[in-house]
Image 1 (tube, protein in one colour):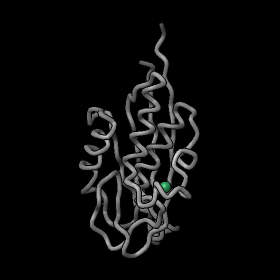
Image 2: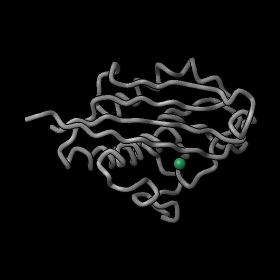
Image 3: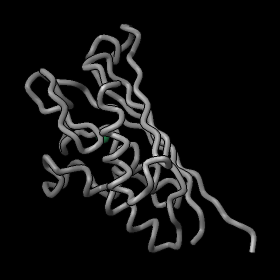
Image 4: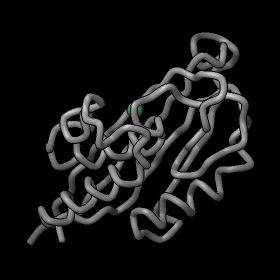
Length: 161
Ligand code: MG
């Protein structure tokens, strides 16, 4: 039987506020501000969750984990990834690879890229060489560049098991 593949894409953005912890890819990164959010505001894991759900056409993170639900108040977003991954597997798919980009003017994320790859690989139970995390600034323009927001994009490829 011919191999069957699915692709999914995710994007997320959060406003940054002084005094909030900056959680990216399940890692807390030392910084003077962090995402304003109902959950922990992890843009990378939210984009990844949407990419996983999107690949199997199961809706989006807002339907699965509504920000009106007190269960998700300050939630650890690794839970969202776990649930999306479980849904993907239950429907007979496995992750081939993921590619993601985090957009932040500050802090500089390049020193954290290796740790972020390891973390995502662990969450998805993938070899690190199947996980890519890139980092970009906002070139000092727009909400990212003015340090008002942080964002992430993720794309995932699935293969039929
Ligand atoms: Mg979000």
